[in-house]
Image 1 (cartoon, helix red, strand yellow):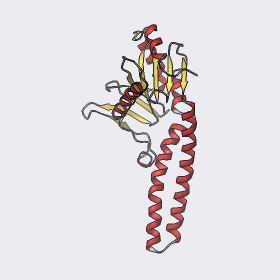
Image 2 (image 1 turned 90 degrees about the vertical axis):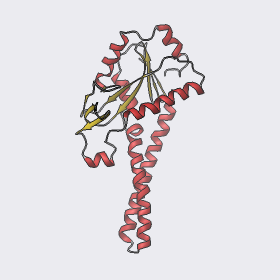
Image 3 (image 1 turned 90 degrees about the horizontal axis):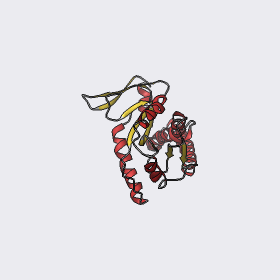
Image 4 (image 1 turned 30 degrees about the vertical axis):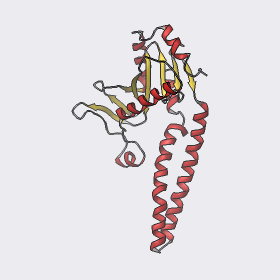
Length: 233
């Protein structure tokens, strides 16, 4: 498998995530010290005015650390999960308008990685994904361990990919499909009835290979598509 990474974006966001983390921690410490050492009501109010944005920045730093600061990053996990695919496949990370796009005989797939743990299911009655178990309530609330709106993410990525094609005058008629992967060792995915393919990262390569047997894209179609996209590393 070939890989095309936006190295500049990855390194830039990694640095930004570190800066946001240090800055948010400094604000938290300043706000706490101010609130503990200042009996004056006005100063205490000002301390809380510091703590609130500091808390928001901590949430941002957690999100950015999960995506950019820690190794293996989601793009590295996806690449490892797909290791062994032939050179007919190309994985594009952060350079096609969407975070992760796979192009090959199996078609076009936008891969959406999630780090949440627990049992992942799809409730057909409520028409939504659900998470059972995994992190405790505090972690879900404050450490972003709770499940996000998966289908809402798909809508965002669809618009981003269409915008990318339009802005770069790319003529790709095939519409990408979505595959959601959960890469936590503590995640158990039971969502065959979900509207989007949803599975554990360890099963991603097997799924793509099964799709490739259907030959959704011919060699000529693959060549036409990749000629319009960023060159693999």
